[in-house]
View (tube, helix red, strand yellow):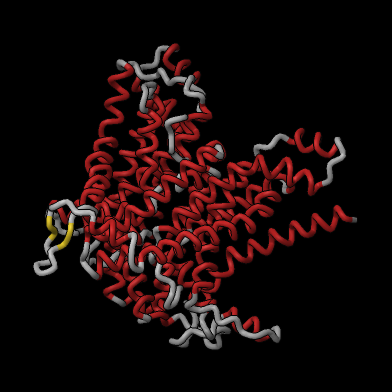
Length: 265
Length: 305
């Protein structure tokens, strides 16, 4: 009896936490269909017109395009640099390997604002004007970790005997890379890239210090909420951001399971 | 591992033992490794490490009151300012809130992770993991905005309380709102490492405890909790670090007395244009995190990730 009580208590707790995790996100989606321009619960009248308002808002469109450019460029750079770093650290046998691996995770071990202020200091000191490129530099720096962690986690779980067998059977380095290494790490690469994209597309803290007067989508959202302007539109935009991020995240979770977390952490 | 302060990655270094090697490349090994590491290391050294170093130097410079230009003369005046006036109380408030958020997330996450790791079937556990990872990665600003909507005067929380015949909590734009929002946003970051730690406990240990006559509570308290500690500390690194540098949640969700360290840095640099003072303020979270990671390492938290 006591045991059964404990079990149902446990599942009650789990259900409660699940509601806690998802109810706020559901609220956002519901409010994006609220006709009133002043939010209040419960919603009385429904409309899809705010979607059309957001769609035709040039400021939102420009911000969306800027975010997309930054995220695509940062993801591409992070994919190259992050996988090089993962292969290098995995092969490394020298003293200082742990220091190097620490270096790559530092941008997410330290609060993001530090990356932001540090890069801002450098840009000011060097007289570099803030532009799309400075945003990309900031985003790449913390996106590298995502790819790095995903790929290195996969490499460590892959038995080295596979590569040795390939070499013993006469495969060249290129053949081993092409037919053994690449298929084994492909899903980790895809997952890393998707998560890097999601992270960049949503980032606000580092971007605040590297964007200057430009608006990425998160910076636009941040500004609108702070000024209390266009809030019904904000509801629509954040709902769309959640949807845009949901797809790559869901795919990544499916591909790499638990590593999905370690790549952010 | 003794010289290591890393997070997830360095931990895996240790797990793999470093003995297995990947000898697939025909190139001279050292040369190939160096060739692989050079581009990412160059990026990090040129853009990131040198920026951090420059920031530390900048914290020792000052701004000319008349011209607004940075004077490249070393002074400790910024560091003195950080330790006097309004800043110590802001720092204290930030650390206190980070600690409170961490404790809250531990309390919510532990039973949840326990069910995931020890009660649920592998299939259900996998679904629960996905249910935690999706909100972890969902848009940060969407989550912040959701809590503004829920907590404000006409929001769902007040509505629910009133319909239950209770007084409205009116949490909107208070420190309580900030605490709740932070606890919500960082919760998945606590659940995942705790789950990882709990899942690794061999079932035989729990069986032994029960066979020797221990109750469930005694087993949880004296067997499970000590073994879960590294996971709890690992999760707390995120809840702590993420709260220390945030200025968005306090600005949007908080109220009049919700200024945190992140806001102080943000205002000093972007409103006040005082980069040297902002850099000096940014040294504070670095120092706090270095101390925190040092303690975490002693508690063997890195092995749990």
